[in-house]
Image (cartoon, rainbow, N blue to C red; front, side, top):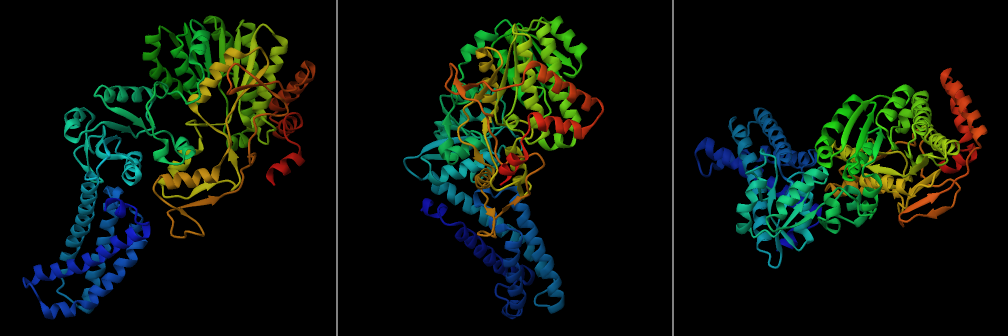
Amino acid sequence: MYQTLINLPRWAKAGILLAFDLVAIVAAYYAGLFLRLNDLWPEAWLSRSLPLVALTLIAGGVLFFVLRLNTIKLAGFESSAAMRTAVWVVILTVGGFALNLIIFSVPRTVPLIFGPILYLLVLGGRYTALGLLAWLSAGEAGKTPAAIYGAGSGGLQLLAALRSTSNYKPVLLIDNNRKLQGLRISGLKVIAPEALASNMERFQVSTIFLAIPSITPARRRQIVADMKSLGCDVMELPSYLEIIQSGGILKSLRPVSIDSLLGRSGVNLEIPAIAGSYAGENILVSGAGGSIGSELCRKLLEAKPATLVLFEQSEHALYQIEMELLPAARKAGTRLIAKLGSITDRKLIEQVLGQYAISTVFHAAAYKHVPLAENNELACIRNNVFGTRILAEEAAKAGVRRFTLISTDKAVRPTSVMGASKRMAELVVQDQQARTPETRFASIRFGNVLGSSGSVIPLFKKQIEDGGPITVTHENVTRYFMTIDEAAQLVLLAGTYTEGADIFLLDMGEPVKIIDLARQMVELSGLSVKDAETPDGDIEIQITGLREGEKLYEELLIDAETLPTPHPKILRARENTFGTRQFAAIMKKLAVAVEKEDVQAARRILSENVGLTQEEQAHLAS
């Protein structure tokens, strides 16, 4: 019975709810007449009320779809849905009252009595149905009782998925939000985490699903440790990308592993090798407050370096990462130094590298947003190109043993100022290697990082929450994706492999089509895409056109062959570069253009030396 009900098509469920609401309208008018006239069967007034009831039924049916009550899932009928239902009732009440003044079908107070009764009937019907579904679900034999930690959108999506096809039977919701505790959501009681122990035996909970993928690794470790101490199996709901790649929520559920508790990805990146390489080192991370830089710092503290210098231009970002890392630094016995400044400040760079005897540099500071860089070309070039040169030169002078540049796949045959500036930064590093072989220089090149600032998934999520539309620049645009954990660990591990002038890249698998990603995120949110085939859908996907400098697809290699490294997922590339004198001449021309603030000359120099030809750009856009 339960499976039959929940497997009904969406239109059938909406039809049942609409039919109930229309019956509730008739019942509410009858109840209003009864209460007003104190007559169980006011026959004369019943016949006179037919026009008003009929018009209210028509208006109720139309408003049911106008207010999109048909899109509200019964399992997700909470405060926002109750508010939309209240709007529906208020419109019918006010409209009925005004209409009754004209045609006088019933006593004037009846429509006012009708409104509250209708609202109670509709809400009562919904919650009664939820309770019935929960009762039917609880009666299913052979299913494992489970609790869901997280009563937000992720938890409710998982609840609906578990009730539909899973071998698990949800019996409880757990949440830290005190405003939710004690409520019943989708037929399940919400309890505080500390109340789980007293409820486990009563509800026979043996498995807990962690449905809050956005929490920090430290918070995840704490929650899982608490849950496991109760003797429960703990499963986690991963990121949007992992859900999509695995084919849905249920297929992506996984046991919580040690790696995931530490915030690590599924790719085994040999953490012992990282720990052995950076233990006791004096390390500087530029751009330490950014998404990649901050994750690098977190991972480095696990290796217990002697000193970790957080170098950051943003005061707010530096303060945040310092406050976050101080407890871990104390535990690791690492001296944590926060330095505020720009990589274009040569004197400051020289002073910091010398004062703390830095032996390893991870250079993550960069302006990376393509549209912003297109409109702020000179600032991008100063920071990404000349800032890298200053940091690389001073690192070599200070005797730094390893220098690793964080690059991007947009540096490959770039069509944007940002991509071209990052390719020039790679060339700066390679040129510095030729000048100072004592320091081992390397570049790490990878695709889009989920969780970084500007990542497409948080953008799509926000657009879905706002009711759409989702904006995609081109229907054929594709991108490589990796998790921020993979990115950080790739950088740390590849840094141990460098022999000098290396470019490392990660085997990132197949690229993802962005419009497919958008569609699947809409569906994972329990909604439907609004298009020509489904005009009644919830979220529209709009094609906005490629932005200036944006490519249809990204590449990881220019023209080099890849060479293996000790790790099968990390590849090494040796790419052709300029001679020392030739590159010095290019940099001199670029410096003059930047100093004179000649944007066109700077763009031309980048295009002539690292950008695409017009024919190649036309090919990419076709």
